[in-house]
Image 1 (tube, rainbow, N blue to C red):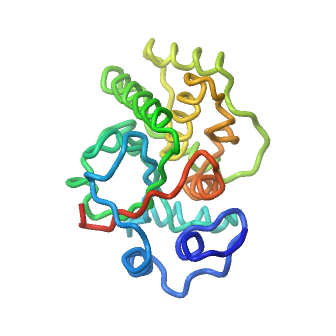
Image 2 (image 1 turned 180 degrees about the horizontal axis):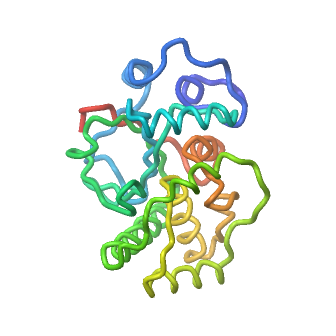
Length: 239
C-alpha cells in the first residue's frame, strides 16, 4: 500500500509504516486536527462506521495488546460502532447490543468515520442495526461475545454467511435464541445483511466472515474497500 498522508498518518492497510512516534490520544488529536476533516454529530449519516480510539480502560488495553500481538495494523483502534442517525450509535459492548448518545456517554471518545458511497447501503445497515437493537431490548439475548472477540485474532479459513444463513440466524434471534456479538463483528454483520438485502451480496461489502473481523482488521478492510471512503474524524469532547 502506498503511504500517503491521508491514510498513513492514522490508518494503514495490510502493510504499514513503522509505529507513529507519538501514540494514543495525543497522536490522534494532533494529526486529526491538523490535516483531517473534522466531523460533528450533525455531520453523521445513517450507517457511518465509527472506529473508536482505544481508551485507557483495561478492556481496551487488552484489545490493543491482542491486536498488536496478532500482527494487525491499526491496533490503537479498539472498538467499532454504527451510526443510527446524528445522535446515536448502535454497538455491541458489555451490555450487549445497545444504543448510546454520542454527545453524552461517548463524548470523550475519538472516532475515525468511514461512510459507504451508496447512501442506501448505509441506511440499510442502520436499519438492520436498529432491528437487532430492538430484538435485544425485547429478549436480552444479543449479549457481548468476549470469547468471540479473542478468537477473531486467530487466523483461520471461513466464508461469509449466505442469504439462507442470514435468514435462519435472524429467525432464531427473533425467536429469542441467543446470539452474541462483539463490536466489529456486529458492524460487519449488519453491513453484510444490508448487502444481501440490496442484491449486492455479503462479500461485495465485506469479504471476510463477521466473526473473523477485529476492530483493527475492520479498519484495514475499510481503507482498501471500494464501497467506503473516509468521511473524517470526530475529536474527543467536540460534538
